[in-house]
Length: 123
Image (tube, rainbow, N blue to C red; front, side):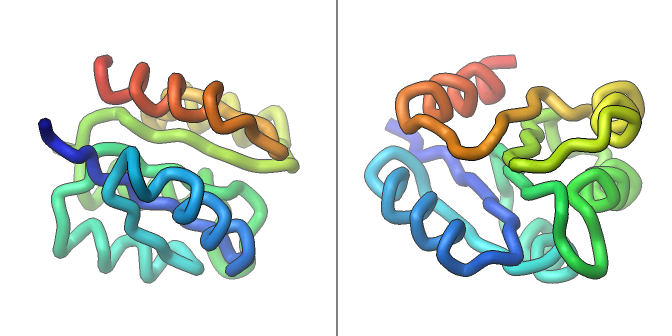
């Protein structure tokens, strides 16, 4: 059975560690602490789902999705924002222009997030 590849982008190392520890048996997890590192990973790997925090220094999650949309338009729209912060206009823009699949609020629940990830892959 194929192990889907998930890229999780968050500037907080503890959040990266928690998600990886939680889902390492379900998916192959790639981690990035910022948008630039995420773009490097996307250049070198075939990623199935991108999950990004919204509020990060240098590049927000929506700005990252915009970059992905421009640089990697062939990547399927399996894109999630996982964040405790949301500016309505930014999130709306991500849905309309940058192929955001779903916004998930922190704190997340394992079963719900796993179901959303699998749903995104099936789209």
